[in-house]
Image 1 (tube, helix red, strand yellow):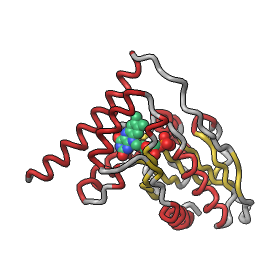
Image 2: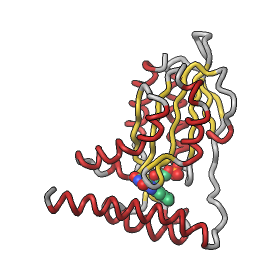
Image 3: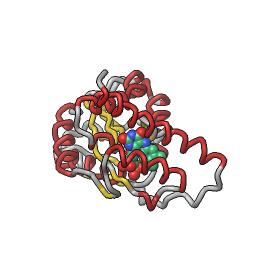
Image 4: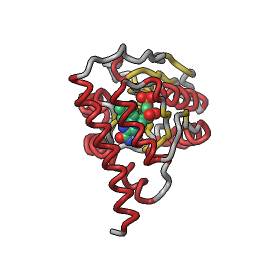
Length: 219
Ligand SMILES: Cc1cc2nc3c(=O)[nH]c(=O)nc-3n(C[C@H](O)[C@H](O)[C@H](O)COP(=O)(O)O)c2cc1C
């Protein structure tokens, strides 16, 4: 491994460690009010095939994944499907769905726990219907081979439970004003490594293109 790769890996590892530590430290630090999120629980389109609906189920911590799930839901509906878009925490019955798209923000190198649990809890149903996964994170902004490989590992655990028909990797948002003190601290290092400033990096064109392509695999 050359020096550059060593430093790169060090940066990613440090960032991930700080972000995981955020979870630990927040357990012993007085926490501010949870971030207000405009959760979307809605439906789009009408099925022209009369063969069930598609569910887009998502998990988010600061809200950017909500918009991504919404955009995917709208795009799938444009392809003729009836689509429900719901937070994973509000879904219990999957029997009415003929296909699923499940996505989450990435924290500490993996989906949020409620999204992982959702896949584990519904493993049996999910293996019988086409299921696509997506992630929303910031490492995708680093467009080199090593980072791409690293990002591929983020879905390792859920991929081992259910094999998805497609995987979407989308850039999210860096929103320090929504983080508590320790998260802001950890994220500052991480953002320094990624060389990004606070902002919304969601790429709607890429999200829509993925949804359009994926709709064919969910048919
Ligand atoms: C506590 C915390 C940990 C994070 N960990 C990672 C990470 O390991 N890798 C990454 O690429 N992005 C990481 N991010 C960035 C988020 O994935 C990104 O901000 C995403 O847009 C968040 O989605 P949300 O707004 O739906 O919660 C982290 C963000 C936070 C707040």
